Length: 151
Figure (spheres, rainbow, N blue to C red):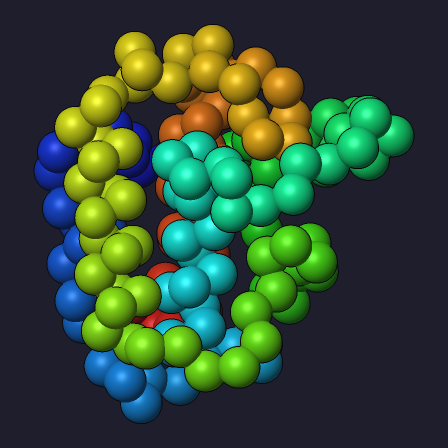
């Protein structure tokens, strides 16, 4: 798996994103390319702008940590047409250029902060994660959706 904290791997993600154009169509799923970019930004918003999102309650957090966390932070890739958590659903069209710029900015910020900034950092939904778990979560999600759109 790529390392989002490595400059070369982060640039690889950015290069893939830069291959997308406004009318790039997904190979599966229902999202448009602008919605996919906005969707990918949510993971980073929960780190850098948590006030934008409602934190899960104690019961929801228990379920997320127990049943969802292993699938999200593990190394196994997401299958096509995996279900999406309600807070990650994007409705309506988004500004392609703005979402692309936001996602690239989040990738760059994450890489520049480095693995040590994430080791033991509290996740919005899963509690404390080590840097490998953060990397897996970011990398898996990006790979899944960039592959969905053929880049």
